[in-house]
Image (tube, rainbow, N blue to C red):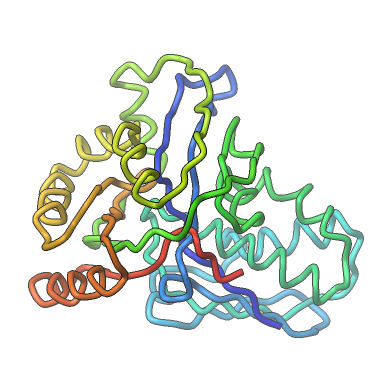
Length: 289
């Protein structure tokens, strides 16, 4: 059994000042990439839990107990009272510490595939998801959604269509913890009213509205990694490029294009000039789930 783990993209991300528990209230419109920007998690019956990692980005991860796939598997096993095991394989393509929820997507995919393998009620997966990380509930949902609270509140969002885009990561690890710390050091954010999502008739209307939104973690991330500002400028200069913004805590950026063909052309050109960058053309909001 196999489940995709597509990249998560924050089209906007509003962050409020940290609460007493140290967690930050979030308000974000989240979409998912297509199969061209996804990991994959598979499982087969076994007596114990084990994890094998393959794929081009396998060397960036460890297979120990701190891997989110194994954490998710153990949490689900305990919550549902499962005594069976599973041999899990993670085929890793997405960059790590990249702001596109790769680890969370992998954990959510593990919850889905094990729910099928062990023939469980999906309520068990939904119950354990929030404790695994702020992005895991929305990744488990798998469709366009507003992510709120500490990530545990997921409200499905109806969008007018998929957004042709280019995802670009310059190969600069950008761990979430230091970015939030920089956000706090800069004064944090005021508590906000949750965003009311308008009704959009066209993708162009959605794109125009997004231009008035923001990612509150982009400035803190750029303060830690000044080279990120140059990445944004490079993307803005691509032929036919539209709105560009960082996703999550970085360092992956997305840039919109009028068509998927235009995004692919720009991606090909960018890969020629920056062969060490991770570049993927995809449709955002058209998940592979």
